Image (cartoon, rainbow, N blue to C red; front, side):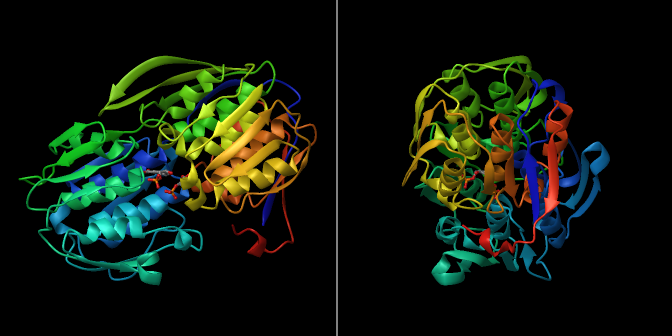
Length: 450
Ligand SMILES: O=C(O)C1=C[C@@H](OP(=O)(O)O)[C@@H](O)[C@H](O)C1
Ligand SMILES: C=C(OP(=O)(O)O)C(=O)O
């Protein structure tokens, strides 16, 4: 298993990087391109492992996809959503919850049998949340252990029964699975959510001409009367990846960095709002909007930070940034309360537990609660060896912690950064963090399971 040893940054981070492309939008662009008739060019596609899982599953539905990783482009050719065919084999979603759940929605109106599975981490993540609502469409759907987990089978049909469903958790994956399924219904369907989760699927469906009625907490989707026509997408960078670089610059003294072309959809950029409440200096430049998605450049400078309360209303908009926010909190003056974040327990690992254990190892003042963390700062972290539990966001959070610790931080199992951000260590290096070493550890992977 690969271990990274990250040494304290002995000088400021400076320079400019093009933000890694957006994973969430890349999944959706590929899926929607597969549903549209014709050829779609997706530029700014993320070639992270999760998005590659989506591409390989879509190919199994008979979609033709060419990839050009050097220029960040994917070309998808499809006969349209009524032409997708029953896969010959089980679909493998790898580590990607987004792939598994969104494709459950797509498979609902593909006649025949679709079976979806994933890696050991994904097979532990909850699937009832998509199985239950999708069964309202009249299809046969079920999963292992009384519908709790993958593998999930779907016996699709067309047309589907329209539905009205209120989500109990604010999950963009579940909402998106339902919206994708609703395309195959013979009348409008309605999805409600308790708090706003990211609305990329809605923005992209509108761009493709699907009629949506949107208001806070509620969306009504009208199935298309005619085939969807292919339209190209140019995707922005991933604010969830930018968050690691931004956090590093906020904490390493005298740093000043520039991150180009970051996606700034307000339902997704709670991290920036939170950083600004903490007193972090982040300026936005060159703000623009494409297919309903805001994007711009971020200028981030070393800042003195203060503790804040992060509650359940804002959690969906920074759900993947809680681990790195908890590292920032160790350097903030006062107490940071993170509550309403119990969803983190069912991600690639139990992220609340993983952050608690790792931060404790590094000497942080941290308490674990069932739905969050309480962190008191500022504390000078010391060096140590921490586990990523095979979770990319945990690995990158502790790599950033290593830059501001007194001694080196070793992160066990760092290969997982490829899941969302393969360029992570190269970007750190280009901003001046050259003191990172990698080595293979003898230890077995067994330990890395939370
Ligand atoms: O829809 C998406 O692209 C995602 C939604 C979130 O998951 P949930 O919908 O489970 O909250 C997030 O954690 C995940 O990284 C990507
Ligand atoms: C939770 C994540 O992704 P997914 O749910 O798609 O596995 C993530 O990227 O942090």
